Image 1: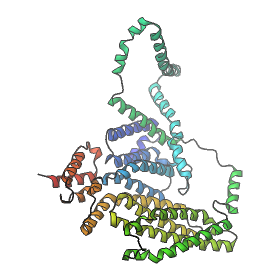
Image 2 (image 1 turned 90 degrees about the vertical axis):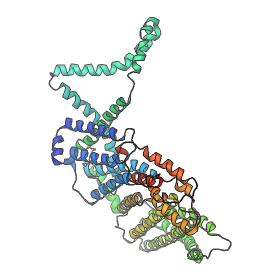
Image 3 (image 1 turned 180 degrees about the vertical axis):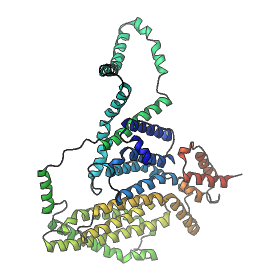
Image 4 (image 1 turned 180 degrees about the horizontal axis):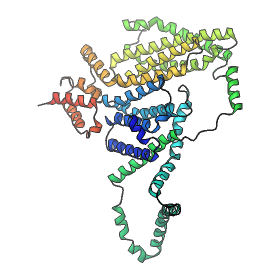
Length: 501
């Protein structure tokens, strides 16, 4: 790899050629092909390209750089391992976005802090403005490579001719159109030209070529934006002193301590009363003790959304009140810290109530991907609340960084947990216990659910064989090794085994 990097180091024309080759690989992998094994393969090639082109700009490797690299790799691999339409579509945006942030963190000359939003702005700056600025650099490199041996006078002449052609082509199109309208004989002479031009329309080869060239310029401009960035003006001494003065004075975002104390006290009075009522029947609901006249389905459905929404509002209130637990007013600060702990505790009880209601609802009506996702979201929200409580106890605790690490880890976990397979398993277990199964819903799931679904007997769903046969035909229509997906392969194998004559 180091030898490969030396081939392009200090050779911008070689780097441009490599960028165009990468653009060609991109259209080969994805033109008229769904993303499969091609996706992680291209992510790997992109990282190799950036390493070869900008190796000397790398900052020293640290824990976050490695963590983010592992996250990008796992998310890219999830496109091959699983077949969730939702996560595959989302990862088409998330993985490139995280890769660009990773590049900005590792290569930018400012050495940005990964716990600040400025890192995202830096990534966007390199992707758009600094990238486009170097398209001109690419054109100049090509021009110099063609005219390198020409004398300066002839070089300027050729440059003038090329610029003249670029200006004349659209101008000629307008002039010819006007002349053809003004003179019938001239129009007759030009009658055959449209037919000839029709043969020059953009065919598949033209689209592929355009795709390759445009992406090649994008890749070259992107890597060159790190090699030759347009640096901003350094922070002036006055601005730096003002910023440090703000930090020393303790000025920060959030509620005034006294205001926060008032809001937290009033809100917590209501929540304590609510939690006291919840404890009267929350835990008893699992044992069959429900409020009078309320069925399991009614109990599960009623108030679930409101509880989750209230918890989200509590979390936002908690974030805006964190600074109220600090400061010079020690009595108010201590009171606010206790109110924040109480708010976290009440929020966790409310989330548990919502979690229990959703569990009862699933027992009554079955499991779906959406309900599974809501369970995961509530667990995630509890972890956010716990970290916020740690921040109340330890003012120096890096809350934003902890949230970034937690969010990335949780998103990777959701990609690899296999939701649709888990939902199918849970529904089949429920069928064994209660004899109820929504096969129509399970048949709408992706290939992740097919291996388990293929073990069902035909009595459960009369048209099961036919529907599974349709799924098998769709899987057989996959074309090209670029679209290979492990989940599709397993589903196809399971269906062929079941439907074999």
